Amino acid sequence: MSDAIVSVEGIDKSFGDDIHALVDVSLSFEPGLIYGLLGPNGAGKTTLIRVLATLLRPDRGKAVVAGVDVLRDPVTARTKLGLAGQFAAVDDYLTGRENVEMVGRLYNLSGAEARRRADEVLEQIDLTHAADRQVKTYSGGMRRRLDLAASLVGRPEVLFLDEPTTGIDPRSRVDIWELIEQLVDAGTTILLTTQYLEEADQLAARVGVIDRGQLIAEGTPDQLKDTLGGAVVEITVDDDRRGDAMAALGRINGEAPNFDLGSKRITLPATDGSQTLVEVVRALDSAAIRPGDLTLRRPTLDDVFMAITGHTAEETDRPSQRKRRTPRRERRSA
Image (cartoon, rainbow, N blue to C red):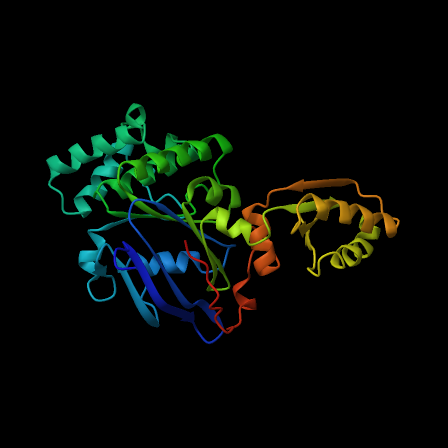
């Protein structure tokens, strides 16, 4: 895309001979939106963020942020971007205001300009009331918001948020979501990594699914859900009948059902909508299986991820288990 604000082409990154963190990753997106990079721990999300933020050089490939090649001109690229990592990078013994001013000075702002920008961003993220308190008195949600404030002090065109709501309470998570949406409304483009399906669904205009270092699907949330046929049948059965149920359901439309170990629910793409539900009831009845629960619903991004990868996005992909695979080329775009 010629008008892309972030463009990644063929990025590879390995650590040693066994850990292939990124494998031929390519993506691009235009300004003014939230792009969600969805995947489990160890999938390669943070590695890609570190490459884009000039903190890590890839083994191969090209990355451009706001018109600047981050590998050829990292100094200029840093003036165009902001980064909030997985953990709030704030000093407990400084006040909130002092933390933000310090980052402003690192951006080479004058003392007066750093103070002015600190006041602006602290008001923007609703932390003015706590600006002069030591950060060690802040809650987890307040610390994350302060970290966001620090990442905004340089007025970045692109903001990278690496799992911004990990480890905070549900109320604070909603607050962060609202703040992220406000930033986009104000003109900031955001690349958001997350392992929370609900978060990607709530915030992202486009989503890339990454697993074991490879981008394996891409599109809007609705486009990705539609790959499952627009709806799914969800079933629960007794553990001792699960195998029989999976076998019976697999004969309905030729597609193997999925089983989520966490929720202990079986899902099957409802290619014919309510007719598939009728066929599920008949198949279970013929096998003398009484379901505990049986529903027809629109698929979630969790269903998409399970169908593509065989596991949920919350499951950890251990680096020691990663092996290089042939890159998949069947990527979906908006």
